[in-house]
Length: 474
Image: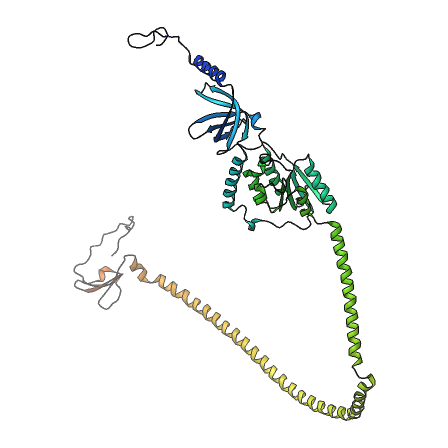
């Protein structure tokens, strides 16, 4: 039975009337009073971060979904980035949101539901990036043997930066640039990625020297503490770095995705410093040892060559014996030399005389060649002069011909006039002189027409004051 009275048509008659806001607030108080502070396990779905910094998401299991919100201050304290598919434990207050007629949990705390969930997410992300080729060994750069400048991306406080600087100073002091970043919590991955990109955009020879080697370092910690080094923005910043990069995150047993994409993975920050530079004293000792060995080898080679020369010298005959045969031959040639000189002079005299005759013949031939060349030049000039004269003469004859043609009566015939000739072909200019029955020839533009005179024309008597009519043709 209900406490509300109903009419016969089952509608309430005396039920209290509520506004929408009153009902929404009543439901809000009921939910908050009934559940209060709760802990809930679920899988994150539809996670997104608003421009305000608040995080909105949903928690789900295999049957239900619960909306949730995490304010900016709480989200900034997380050691990991909430994302879809991650199983978490959250704690907070259940409440309602009247503006949407829904209930939700306001999250005060969030933690991963065991390392197993994080490991599963890490393995999934590792496979996706490996499929892209980000971990391909062919992409890795060689670490310089002795860099001039080393860039370090790490927290400015703590033992990590002190260990690196101390180790570098002991082994081989170098110019070190430190880019301070967060290495844990919200915003850490963004700062690390920006630091790597920032070192890469430095110009060679600029006010701030561009590093030859980068070290990204952090001390040990839990999987959640090191999670920022598994974030996608950090991995992609390392993969596009043009500066060789050494990763030194956590202890030797800790593994993060930055270790797979870096050019060299160091088990500790101290080991990273050892990889970055050689030991200066060892290098000096090595150079000195090489110099000493080179000097010894040089002395040994000189002694060996000296002994070899001395041995070869012992096998040679005495100088007097070597020169005896040459001395005898010299004496013999000295006796033959005057006769040979005389014969040589005679031969050269005959040869010179022949050359003289040959030179005179050559001079005549050269003169003939020069005359032929001059004749060719004059012939070319005469041909050009004849061509010029002929052209000028043709022009002189063409001009009167064109004038004669322009004065010809044929041009008049072209304009529509005619020439009348008698039977003897003589032109007639007076019509009164043509007898009746006379045979005439009328020459037009395109030929001659035969005609016969049938009657004489009547001429008009002109008065003295009258002017001749224009256009009259007999």
